Amino acid sequence: MLSAAQYLPSPNHDERPAGTTPDLLVIHNISLPPDEYGGPWIADLFLNRLDPSVHPYFSEIYQMKVSAHALVRREGEVIQFVCLDKRAWHAGKSCFDGRENCNDFSIGIELEGSDRIPYTDAQYHTLARVTREIMERYPGITPDRITGHEHIAPGRKTDPGPAFDWKRYHKAIISS
Image (cartoon, rainbow, N blue to C red; front, side, top):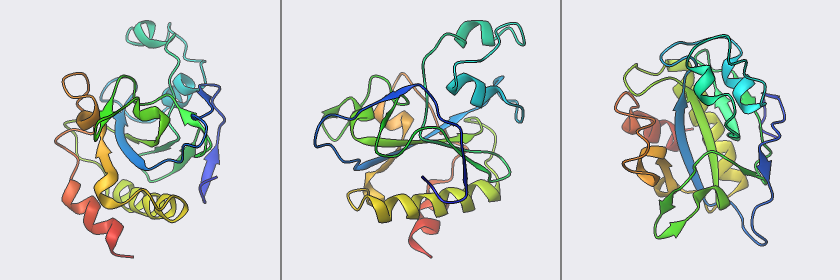
């Protein structure tokens, strides 16, 4: 478990292929409803309990079986949904460095946000802390093996998007 994380176990995970250790970190964003923050909706989606009657957008997605290993809320709170050694269902059809099915060998972290709205200072601080913790546990995850969903699923996904400051994030993970 990640330190200082609330744990809400998602049923949307399974075992990684035998002998597979995570060596990729994928950064995502999510907001439910789109471009709105707060509320239980992200957790509800990952826990398969999203109520489709609450918002019209929810009726389009409530049956999806998705998860991430962790979510970093706008205030910096971390919620962990899947143990890091398990395969979360976050990347979908994806490829990194010639390897398909990134869920098999990656850890997925969602930031509560959207492609166009700047992320918070608290999120950058927490994401850097969580990243360093993950890199300590999984030495195969190095700064050059951290990527965005947009990079492993180009044309299909756009997150974390242009609002995410990669330079700021990389600087934060290398300075302790």
